[in-house]
Length: 141
Image (cartoon, rainbow, N blue to C red; front, side, top):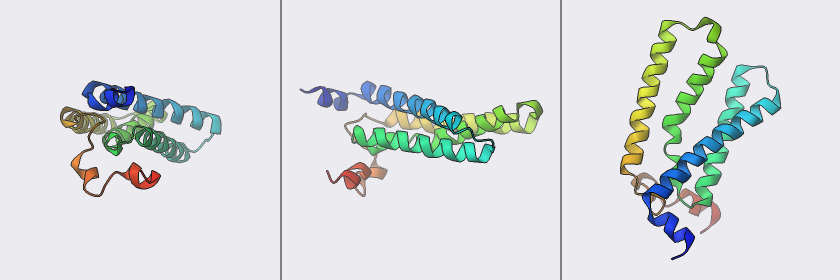
């Protein structure tokens, strides 16, 4: 059994690779936005979202599993909210804290539901399997 087959067969390697991909996306997004030297917070959010999306999508293509991209939709809003709180930290009010806590709970619930039911890289979730793998369509495999 090849290394690729072993990675695709297990649940734990898939979860680890996906967590590494999300941490990598965050690190690269922060590095690119800092290097860009943007002053406008909306421009920073837009660029960071674009970079994070590209990194997670690239990793999902590399591992040939577009389901790995699914947690992005529950984690990205939290990252945006935390950036918003960070940039406006001098004037944080109770409403912003409550909304961020609720968003954290939403992210935690959806992401944990995904990882609880995801069998790993060897299988994509039914939503992506209905129309075929997005990475297969992109790469022609």
